[in-house]
Image (cartoon, rainbow, N blue to C red; front, side, top):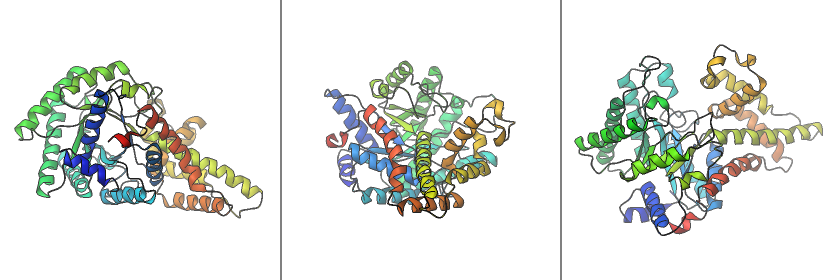
Amino acid sequence: MSDFNYRQKAEAQGYPLTEYILHRIKMLHEAGEPPRTLFAACPNSLTVIKAALRAAKRNHAPILFAATLNQVDLDKGYTGMTQKIFVDTVRIEAESIHFTGPVIIAVDHGGPWLKDLQTLEKWPEKKAMDAVKKSFEASVDAGYDLIHVDPTVDIFLPQGETIAIETVAQRTVELIAHIEAYRQRTQAAPISYEVGTEEVHGGLADESVFDRFLMLLKDGLHKKNLNNVWPCFIVGKVGTDLHTTLFDTEVARNLTTKVASFNSAIKGHYTDDVSNPEAYPLSGMGAANVGPEFTVSEYNGLMEAEGLETTLFRKGRIARISEISKKLEEAVVNSGRWKKWLQPEEKHLAFDDLSQERKHWLTQTGCRYIWQNPEVLVAREILFDNLNRNGIDAETIVLTPIEHAMDKYFTAFNLVNLNNKL
């Protein structure tokens, strides 16, 4: 990677890159600097990857990419990338703009049945666990820095029943032990870990269960002779989910205090469009994931570009229009992935029976699943060609709103110019 100097510093001090940055942030804070929260972008498209690197370079800050197995995996996910392709893509894009700041590559929500295909096809436990282990091995081979081990879903439980925290801990230990055995066998570099989930089905929303999980995890790792392995991030339910935007500072502070004695930090998920991002570092949050918000930003950028295209068409300056908005909606509907986000009262409705507002939201949100759809790629190519031929930089029009959304987090999380101090 182009961040070799930072990796060299981390290795010299005996840390993996992620933990080195967290350690430096802690030291800086103890020396009187403001607290900081790492910003993690969900790389749901090549455009988001480009925007994140450009924003990180402009802000002179580290960037963390947290990729789900739906996005990036051995089957190429919905981004069209394996773990190796993903890492190589990030490296090449960073080099293309000469970004030499720290880049953390991570698995997000790695666990059985968290890949949509496994749930749809109802894979048995062993098959699902084995697939996750293979995915983790590929992540180690590709040079990932951080793996989120998240076995908090069990599709075979009766509806409404929460998975036993003992099962979550046992599967977490099993997966970490597998990664460590594979890493040592292949002489790969040390990996950092993230555990837990913000989802209610994981059982970690209740603080007493949260405490029990930590003790079971510590005991389980000890029994596997993995006393030197401990997650740097523990995911906490801090008030945010797909449909809420208020970060709960009181809960965050309580959880931060709990994990501090374990030398861990709390990581927040579903930080998209959160109304009080500046409260994250003040509450001691170690990192926060943002994802769907950038799909919306990319969609909005494409709609801005399509508006310019329509104007050019009316002026007779292009021969045909891309129909990008129409192609996006058709692709989202045909994918069936929009059904995943329906509210209970909408489950029986066809897409066309939903309100215009809901159809628009589902299209925006669902675009990340179909950016690689051939018809969408063709429409995008036509759109960009139409604008570029008329002296308009189409890619910049689409990148800019994503970068603007990311700048908000770099600023609120006190990350601007951090690279100078790492």
